[in-house]
Length: 108
Image (cartoon, rainbow, N blue to C red; front, side, top):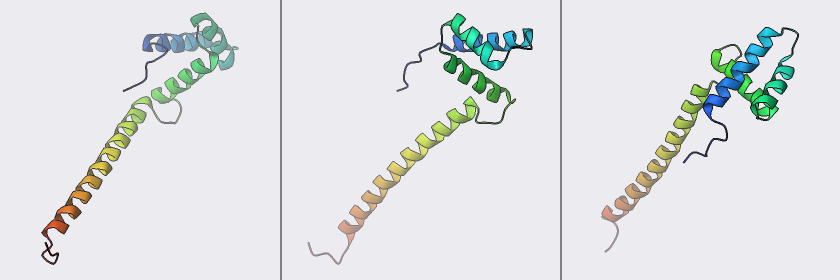
């Protein structure tokens, strides 16, 4: 079960868009300054908004890194690997149990 999100996705997109717009309107404004202004206006912590902006740049391909889609796929594959390892352990235990039961050398 996934944990509840503190901020809705619409707010994230809007806040990131506002940062980008503010920076494009005011070339002399740094990323830090734009994030600080928008974070206060939108009501999120500046570090949260900064990480949203950084992830948005990665998702758009402007900066190298793991995209949101890739991270979700990795998480899904890790979950699947864990499940398959568990199934293998169960099958190994079952096969050794039945092999012992069918062993003709054991006296019953």
